[in-house]
Length: 136
Image (cartoon, rainbow, N blue to C red):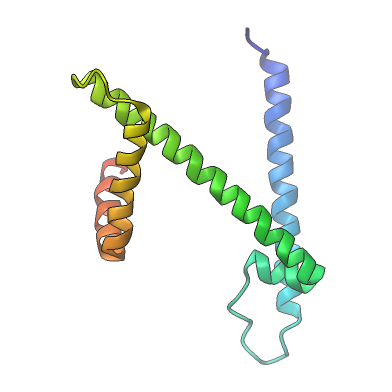
């Protein structure tokens, strides 16, 4: 069942406004942190969310921010591994491996990307250039 144009448009507008406001709050926090730098000195190079939350919310805020980021990044990794494994297993089944479970696809997915990560940034950069050449 379709939700309709108007409710979909309203949801997209709400998401856009939320992103805009979040970005402006982040910008304000960056300005707040950079204003603490002494006059005439270069601004601090560490403008991370942890630095901003520690400066504005204290050690408890820093710990909460680190915990939230850990959960967010873990959820992203789980989603990528689950869907990447599913796609690899579906491709293997389409190629004739009828008994390839999604878990085997996930192991293969992680193994390929772990090999790139362990090999070093040069190989990751080379692979990224090859993939981006197909986009342009």
